[in-house]
Length: 132
Length: 348
Image (cartoon, rainbow over the protein chains, first blue to last red):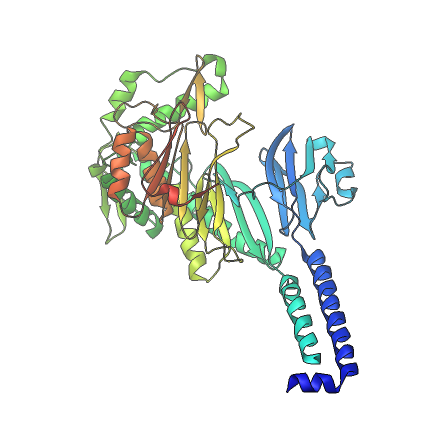
């Protein structure tokens, strides 16, 4: 039955084949685009205080992280859209707050007055939610 | 054919659409106002305002518990444990106390039995001596000294928990030995953490994890349904290579770590920490840290303290006899030992 139908309308068959091909290509393109846009970033923002790494936060999770020096919270690190930036700081110069968001391995934000460095590092095991 | 293309397109878009759904944001809050320790609150919320609102409730409760359970200081209008410890004309007074105090004392007395006396809140007389020498030693490191053993032994004669007279019906406490006093440091933080968590659970709040000075308690799981991940700190705090010695997956459980690296002072180059063995009256030297996993945070707190003053064999026998508890011990050489079910919670 189908064979007969196809033979009966070869031109229509070719048009449908092309449509199908175009459809698949379009679907793949849309999928690739969506995947790229929503893909989880592999990187981490490492918090380095006085030269020692004290914590590591996944860039794939939206979060706000207060950073304390002893018992005083000095900076607020924010992770949004796979990028890390300093939203607030108690330092007088505010250089770290004005720094552009970072997301690529090796990029850093430095808060000199608080001897604090935010450094983007490549994928590693997930940072724990809590440390005890 | 058109239908097929449409179906393909939808199939391609679906995962994208799902990923675009706005997620909750993870927030963290630090405070240093309760139980002389650091409190970390982590939670998932739709907005900072929502998170701050929940934190304010948590801190309000912690403040209340902190004031009630404070043995060093009194507060206006609050009958707390400091008042219970105070003497009037050389004797303790029978005091009517808040239900939150009575509940803690009853719970602590029960755990005295469970831990075979290794967690004893009636040890205030001994612990206050250590507290004094530790504070002095940290303030004047060059003159740091150990408390004289005769002094400790004299104080140890006044640590009988049976002389803590509780009248639950009238909610009164009386310490029948004038030389005794209460020190709830081994259990109060964990007990308060548990009560705060229960309050949040009753309100239907989920997606939070609390850490009050080493007492970790999960409130629900993360919004993605995954359990919480908790890293146990390396007792060798200067080791930058291995910051955590174990990772655990927790859901609706408590984890408490007691460590000799947390609160201590140095005498002649030797470290003396704050967990005092009721039998030797000295800080236990068997472990660098002990972590206990169980449902009730107060129970986990008390057990971790008790295990610190036992041998590994004694502690393991105790943990295995309890249905809901697991433990990890870190020996002085860094070796890690586990109860039979502990490794069921760990991951690489």
